[in-house]
Amino acid sequence: MSLDIQNHSSSNTCLQRIVLKKISRWPYPLIMVMLVCIRECTPMPDPHQRDKMLKLELSQQVGGRVELTQAEQQLDSRLHQLKVKEMGVSPFPPTKHFFKVRHIIQKSPIFKLLQKMPKGAALHIHSSAMVGVDWLVLNATYRPHCYICFTSKGSVRFLFSAHMPFLRWGCFSWSRLDMLRASLGDVTAFDNGLMQNLTLFTEDPETAYPTQDAAWERFEETFLALSGLITYAPVFKDYIYQGLKELYEDNIMYLELRVGLSKAYELDGTVHDRAWSLEVYRDITEQFRASHPDFIGTRIILSVHRTLSVSDVKQDVKDAIEMQKQYPDIIAGFDLVGREDTGKSIWNYQEALSVPSEIKIKLPYFFHAGETDSLGTDVDKNVLDALLFNTSRIGHGFALVHHPLAKKLSRERGVAVELCPISNQVLNLVSDLRNHPATVLMSEGHPLVVSSDDPTLFGTTGLSYDFYQVFVGIGGLNANLGTLKELAMNSIRYSSLSPELQNNATMVWQKKWDRFIAEN
Image 1 (cartoon, rainbow, N blue to C red):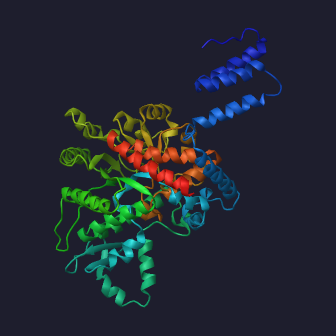
Image 2 (image 1 turned 135 degrees about the horizontal axis):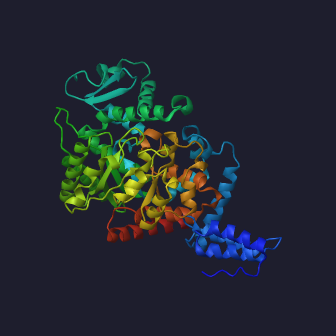
Image 3 (image 1 turned 45 degrees about the vertical axis):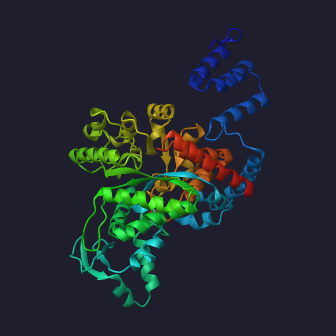
């Protein structure tokens, strides 16, 4: 690009050099607009140039280049008016802890519209926390042979057994739940207490979880409380079906599920292997699709905890490779899960994670990376290491904006960030969601998908709550119907489905979207 700056005074030339240095990395069209403004050096900027700048900037954001039909423009105008009104209400939900404003969000006209909106796919949900807590307590715990114990930490454990279980898990004693309920005067209050033990939801989250350590301690304890309940084989099958049902009712048509190492068990104590569980996921999904033919399906991302040894993870990677060979349509890839700040870094597992390339096998990775605010630490480098290992997506990516090279590579390679705003807030990474780093990613048009991480633990279902926080809080007034449309389409575009299946899913989604626009 040639710049003609010779006819200006020396002072203006100096000013140009300073400004040009700062904007040299901007998109070319925006640079040209700025140069026109600099060259003119008029005391009053040209309003037409300002309009061009604003339009160019808006075109860079997620959804900024989506062309809306006349019907879509009408709904977009309505959404904008609703958002302006909502942002003037106190408290404005994205500025407060989700637990304190969930009831306000539920009454929001925007939220109700988002519930109806076809959202495409949920790409970041953990299998141990995908179902509403009310179903777990009012259905699963009312089944025969369900035992409960209360631990020294004030938590609970469940186990289905034909006989009184042995003491374990720090339990004082076991009680059969049907007999325990029969002895109580207020069973409803008891069941409500059980629900409190299976979720982080509380009316006073700041007191309950004043630090990230406190939030994570309760977070991990709750997974332990859920484990014995949802891995009982008969519950496990119904649990998967219920999870698909709750997603479908929130207008989600496809799921990629993080599945850990827990194995299902029978009443007599028999423990099934992971292959059995994978076949159950496949069979229950097909059973669900038989009555919901517009549901695309479920794929599994095998996950192991990042506190394990290198040798253990190496064996798990090898097992994942074998599972993928045996179930290529079910297995999407592999991930490391658990708290990054206290776990081992991705680079720590380089020997284990290099196994597929050494034997020339493709095992896609979907790494949790950058779920931290500990800048400069080893775990903070996870976003770069995830890209070095060719991750297909980045889970959370909260720290990505602090790594310009990683951000650039992520965008150029089309490696989408799995954005889970409610999870980030509940686990104390951010309090006011208007300050979430994803505001930068959205404004730059970075590849993003919206997901919910652990609905059971956060008192949510589906994706509508997280879409609300992204649309109203993180996106602000600039986010429009085009933003929502692109985010929904991204969930299919950045899924692990084959190109052919992505095309089929997009056609199914488009029909749902057109119906949504026509009816609203």
